[in-house]
Length: 397
Image 1 (spheres, rainbow, N blue to C red):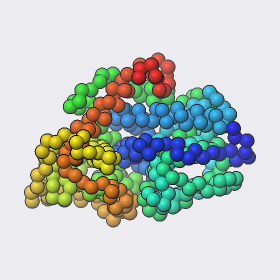
Image 2 (cartoon, rainbow, N blue to C red):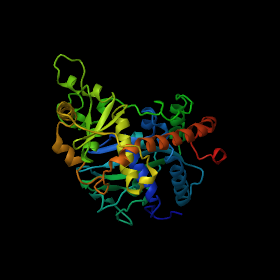
Image 3 (tube, rainbow, N blue to C red):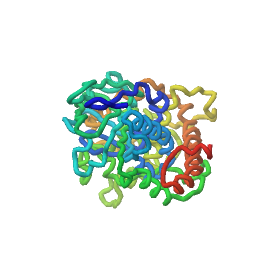
Image 4 (spheres, rainbow, N blue to C red):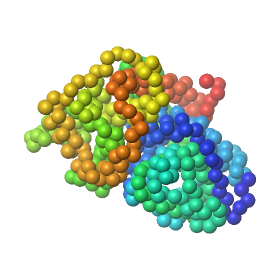
């Protein structure tokens, strides 16, 4: 029970290493430009809007567990509603000065906050320490899995140091006593607009659909002209050592063509690593990115016996294909130096040995993971609609 003048509490090891990695996979597959400079975010409503509603499933038990912890510590059992749930990452240059989380008229509904760290200070990122202006602890030095809960008002004014390198990943929630700001009501409304069918593996029903291009272009002020900066999805692939190939990439360089790069990456694409092209058509850039990030999540723990042993569909890149790869890269990563400043090459996936056999089998494993989550969502959705609330319903398990 919180009785301090500055009520706050640290939950060490609140998230398991497995769920930290799963949420990292979701964020690095789906994130868009965030609300501050060099910040990227993934909200539950965005996942639903981009045909990835199944990816909200790993959040559900965490939201409930965090809400219970906040209500217990602050002595407000059964009073709170979840106002916002999101994955937020801060990269080089991101920071924020002294503030409280309810410091704007449109944020006054926020009563409590919870910040759960998915990676570790000093290992995965530098800078980015969380400081409180008054009270103890004055500074929070997080390890992956730690959570910090505190009141969103002036009793807990805080700041975050500038990120010096790496990417600081968090799951962040705000809670409100005002039920008119209940996030669940909005999410259920979005979910009711989805077809309530269970997609069969191999169908296109569960493939992600990208949002508008300007939500993925960094820096955001360049998103109207696209004359500099980069596409963050392609940047994440680049720092892992991957490139894109499209048979239509030559249209980008054709002055008489009405098509541009944003059209091309919404169409079927191949992934390239070095001089090898994986002979499989991904539906679009988000589909490709999800499978690659899934590989970098699962590959370290995966045994070859768990992967289909069909011959890897790998072909050597031809000269004409290499030219199309180059053209697409020039359009999507206009400022490569900036890419490697924001998403530093060598910070991600260096522990993952790229195995072509494993990677070729990853599409099937990704489809199995996706279809299982879809099935779980479809089973639970009727209860959520009936109750206008998103919760773990043990009766359908």
